[in-house]
Amino acid sequence: MPHFLTAPFIYLYRLVKRWFEVRREYRITLEGIVFILITFFIGFAAINTNTNLLYLILSMMLSLFILSGLLSSATLRKISVKRLAARHISAKETATVQMELRNNKKRLSSYSLRIMDFMENGDIVGAGYHFHIAPRSREIVSYKVKFPHRGVYKLSRIRVASRFPFGFFERAILIRQSQEILVYPQILDVRPILEAAKVDLGEYETGKKGHGHSLYGIREYTPTDSARYIHWKVSARSSKIMLREFEKEEKKKVTILLRNAIPGPFSAAVRESFEKAVIFAASISKFLIDREFQTQLVTGSGTAPFGLGIAHLYRILRALAVIQLEEKTDSHEPALSYMDADSTNLIIHFDYRITPPPESDYAQVINVLTARL
Image (cartoon, rainbow, N blue to C red; front, top):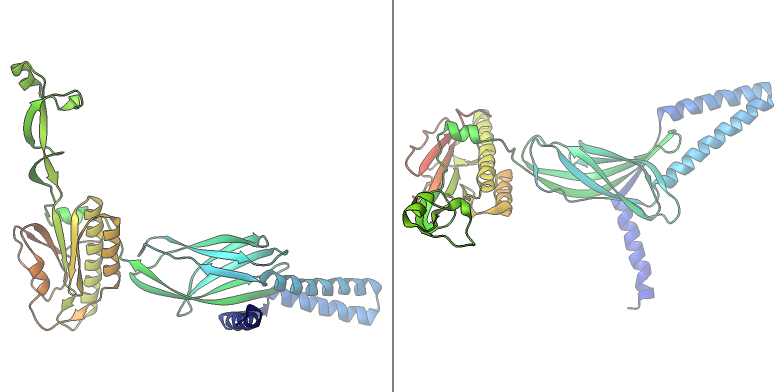
């Protein structure tokens, strides 16, 4: 079909779509009500006294009232806003959410815009303000937010309002824009917890030459070697400059076991302890991955296998952000089968109704019930 035939239908579709996505609001402010009352009394006095000066003041006030309505309407015309993607937000940490504000008018600027972001339940997430946006330009407006808990937060709409120029009217547009923000668990300093639990996360020797502390061998010095590793005593006995070589050390592999499938019912105390356990699991994962440990997360809902780096950390945090308690009647825990001698296994125990598993050489227990946040 030729373009000149399809263009009207495309334009009509976009117009209808925008009509349903954008809702307009209009109200008179308290200042506007006061101004209307004063205008009414001045008009009443002008009619009764037939004074030219009062007629002049009345006409000036009416012109300001009309001008205020026209300018406030023009300010919000062809204004669009889009929420940008918000990533890697942790609970109880201040995060920045950005929104792109566009003025699509060809010649007129927009002034004094207040942008508010709303949750699905109607609560305000945050608000930003921008005084001036030039025609055919865009600006980034941001606000600070602190989410209290981990999980998925659903944002539903954005409200752009303006009282320009005199504050007599407030005009606003409501733009439907659904978006989900995944909030990671809170991240804490877990070093005191690991010290209290006496968790050994040291390095082990590989038997290969590399960077480390244990002596691997001694060889003759070459000009490309660093002088700091010269073994002076051996060099004096052999009349040659001899160099120390060290044994390579590697990080241990660590498995974090978090049992989220436990016998019900789930009391408030159990749920609170489970949330603490999730926070500890997220914090320990960050602690280990920041120190280049190979880390694995095992839960009743799934496994994040061994990995390194920031991408693997985000994979673990995403899993912990949505994990929930699951009721289980069988006392057997399949997650315990993931324990092996090649991995330091950290079992996070949080349920006071269940006896914590015994510690062994490669399975250590972090008891959330006795740890302090």
